[in-house]
Length: 118
Image (cartoon, rainbow, N blue to C red; front, top):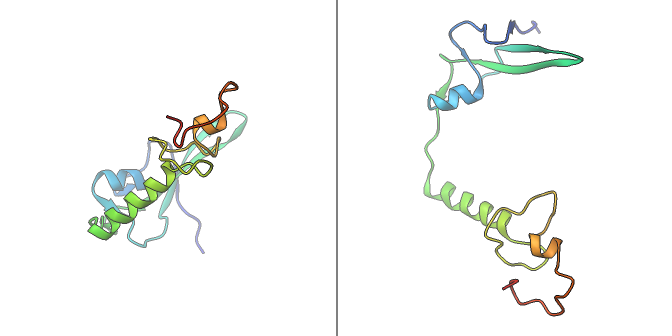
């Protein structure tokens, strides 16, 4: 296997793009492997690395279907539901807490909690 070409940060030739740059153009890598990489040197740490893909081999982004929209809505709803009280928190539950804020930090004077912290 040949080594990947390595370019300095912001010095990649035309025809290469990162995943984010491809997405901004409405493209995706489309199954191609990494074609090159960018390296940005840092002090006292390893370099930052960004992988590059060939723009001419990229394919258009697949359109969102109704089934995909439904699956995405279901996944986002699951991220909003508190596992402790089973209520919709109204925001995405932080993974650092694992529960909604009222469940993570209950009020000390609160003797009986309502169904959804109301």
